[in-house]
Amino acid sequence: MNTVLHRLFSAAFMLLLLLPLTSHAADNFPAKQNFAGQALTLNGKGVRSKLVFNLYTAGLYVTAPSKDANALLEAKQPLALRMEITSSMITSENMEEAVREGFQKSAGANLTALQPKIESLIQVFKQPIKEGDVYDFVYKPQNTIIIKNGKNAATIAGADFKQAFFGIWLGAKPVQANLKSALLGGG
Image 1 (cartoon, rainbow, N blue to C red):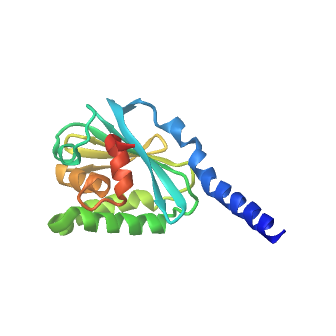
Image 2 (cartoon, rainbow, N blue to C red):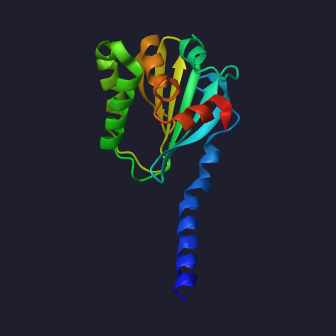
Image 3 (cartoon, rainbow, N blue to C red):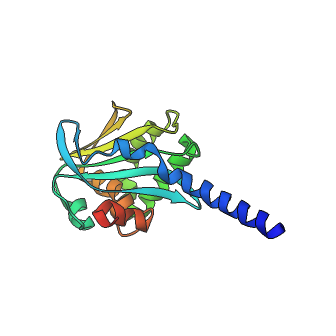
């Protein structure tokens, strides 16, 4: 009897772990999308997770499909990252911490020079964050436009910012290796 209960609880626990994987996030990631007047194509989509929790779904949109992260970071072409918050565990405070940590890994020697731009980005995340919020980070040569739930939240100038920002996901030290692979079309 004890073994049967154990198996039943184990099966129920596994089912609970799988439930977040079937979220409605796919609705916000069409194959083609217009970002700030720029038509882009979904290159890849993945889930940012920590431990057993899915925190957000991200989709990378490009002008032409690419599996080359360095080429995408260096290109002077439009690029967009869509992020849908899928967990109530994401707060303004932990988003700020994650952004700072991401830039430390991505910006390298440029971190100090980028600090004012990083602070501008963090101001966007000072507004309350809730499950279902959608952020679009759109690079149109020389500017990264941040859009929250369809409304412009900030514009940050510079290709240096673009490279460091998108480098958080696509750089040599990405926030999560399998998310980088997924964004690059690796599934």
